[in-house]
Image (cartoon, rainbow, N blue to C red):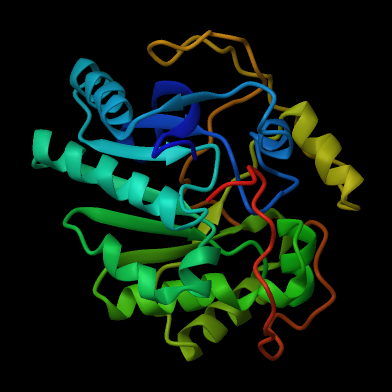
Length: 287
């Protein structure tokens, strides 16, 4: 964040959710091996363009108008890194909703900060918001492998989910289905229900680009038999950007599809006891 502005590198239409106007941002508190925006989030300072909330909303609304979309999202990064980035997000939401009353905004988040500081959740009590929380793992061990941060933070996304649903905010968990058997996933769904999270568990599908498979392999995950996906072309740039070509591709919500067998955590599928600790460092060094 810089004077209320946030770093974005691209605005584009995307096919997910039936068509969604997308702002691709930079900066994440996690470093997941399957992230299609891994290299930018690993080194977010290499090329940044900062946009005000008005500029972000204008780009999103222009794309929505040209494509007849009413759905919006911020992707490629964590939209809620701290109070400053949350305020930035909320102001973008307010502008979009004011200009397009029937808009729906999907907030794609790892849920960490909202679980760490649940008092911030009330800021998201706006109409037509849907929150998709990527929970990464089914227990502390798998969470650590798949999020790139310490296992002691496993519970915070779950706390965020539970508290958002208490606040009446539409929120649901998402899990990369490649790494767990159906039996483990069913046990995890039972755990979520016992934790007060009664919501559909979305199964995420892997975007198997070459660099994604390399990152997974470097994290100790098996990639044998995974079909490589061609690297996407970069064709849409934000207004006023320098237009430097960078590695990236589409990410989005994907429902359905049976689980595939792959590397599994060595847990039983039910999370262990909650731990506490300090929040992980944010990868853009800012809130």
